[in-house]
Image 1 (cartoon, rainbow, N blue to C red):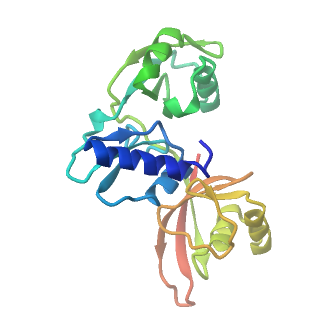
Image 2: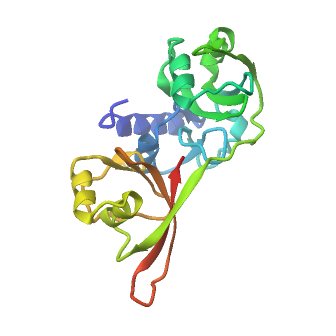
Length: 244
């Protein structure tokens, strides 16, 4: 959905939940849509996000009255487990392409978690029969599918980057992440080549907080893990996690 229209969509769902006294769910949201949703808090309505596992990037949003409790299993999606030969290699791009090749829209699919010989897909319940019945190959690799509880056997891989900055502003953090000059980092920001929590940021001086995720065109994705200090020279020590 267009980001300009998305806030109105969330407000409409909030009003519907308020009128009915029952929850309303979105499809899977992108990180940018999640950020926009958090900016649309409505009185009397609680926002609960869930994507099937603790570190999910794509999540559904449940809008519900404050006195209404929503459990994870109430969200209208299921986990589909894929199995294939351990000696075969499936990439995220291959798997997503095969799933979308079934005619499904991206918002019906949450995170795709790939391990050796196994992959997990979080899929809107309406699309589960399509995935389970029709997804038999990913590229040239044969796969089998089944609805399965996610067993949590997945750890996201990171490369740790550390260094010091004068302040935790966007251009300084981009410079540390990319090892570019501050001027080049600022030019990337102005060119809308840097996303923070899924949305473009055009100000080099914009603050970056612990937990924020930066996507930098040509360099990858990074999460600000921690900020500590200051040092004796008044600088702050940062630890970034680069997604592998």
